[in-house]
Amino acid sequence: MKKIGSLILFLVLAFSLSACAENSNKETSQKLPSDSSTESMVTMEEESAETEEHDETEEISGNHVLIAYFGRWGNTEFPDDVDASTSASIVIGRDGNLQGTTEYVADLIREYVGGDMHLIQTVEPYSEDYDKVVEKNRQEQEEGVVPELQSTDLDIEQYDTIFIGYPIWATTIPRPIVSFLSQYNLMDKTIIPFCTHAGYGSGGSYADIQELCPNSEVLTGLAVEAEKISSAE
Image (cartoon, rainbow, N blue to C red; front, side, top):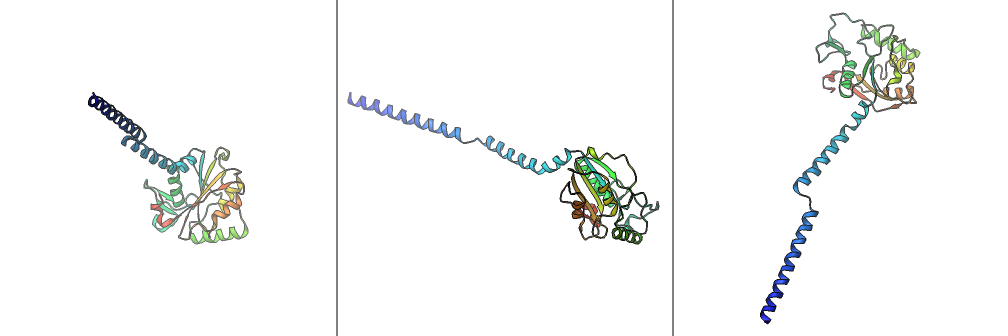
């Protein structure tokens, strides 16, 4: 009888230990994620990072966007057979037609964030002769001239974000940009400058825009060298 009792006791203990081990394994398996759960977590992290990367662009494109720009192309009476290779202001666009370099960048911006394009045009066109343009701009800057712009039906009130594009003239904005920024009420607007240049960067243009628009949020601008326009994207 003692042997039988000992055998029963041994079997009971063995069963208890086996049950404890099985419960422990179940708890561990519940705590540890499966391979598919881990993969799901990684995917969610990647999607989150991708979302953050595009937040700024989506935020801009969610607003009413205006892309206003000025350049010699559109403000100069060039001859029909003008050669794009001889002018830093003109480039062959991706559609094969001639474009101004600043207009080229404006088109790229529109592709990324949408919005409406607006060419800033002066009543009096600029000369085809580059040296005469340089001299006229110098005179306009020295005398504080604000060139008259052609009248348009532009309703600035409908826009929240305004891209301002221009070539760098004498290390800053051309005077027609001063005309545009002075003509419209840009209070509480978000302004994003972009410019083309001959290799010396944006100069003092961003600071000058901020000074002209003290009640606007002027963001960091984008400067593109005209000779490298094909890689501007």
